[in-house]
Length: 118
Image 1 (cartoon, rainbow, N blue to C red):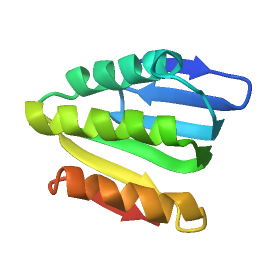
Image 2 (spheres, one colour; image 1 turned 120 degrees about the vertical axis):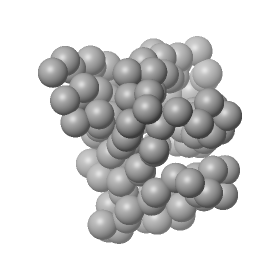
Image 3 (spheres, helix red, strand yellow; image 1 turned 30 degrees about the vertical axis):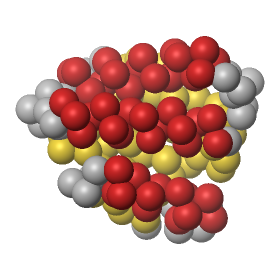
Image 4 (spheres, rainbow, N blue to C red; image 1 turned 90 degrees about the vertical axis):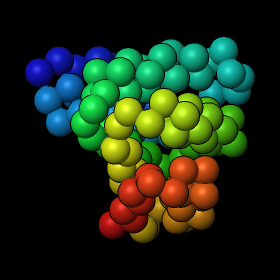
């Protein structure tokens, strides 16, 4: 099992290869595509490592993700759909309003994405 991590002042994004899960925690308010590049690269590495299997994106401990971050995640889902190499599951927290509203929209981008708002 390997763990790949990105940390900021208010957030952490961690890829756990043992469970094929990328976990987002805290509050992410990065401003530009360049600012989100390390997170996007981590997602792409996780996707490649999970090829032929399952990949989970766990947002349950993420309090806030700004529109630039939601856009980055949306583009990742579109790219995963085009490659069609993983079964993608998105985990959300029903107590965090933005997750109820935004994470469900990912299924519109790729109907095969499994959304679980717990």
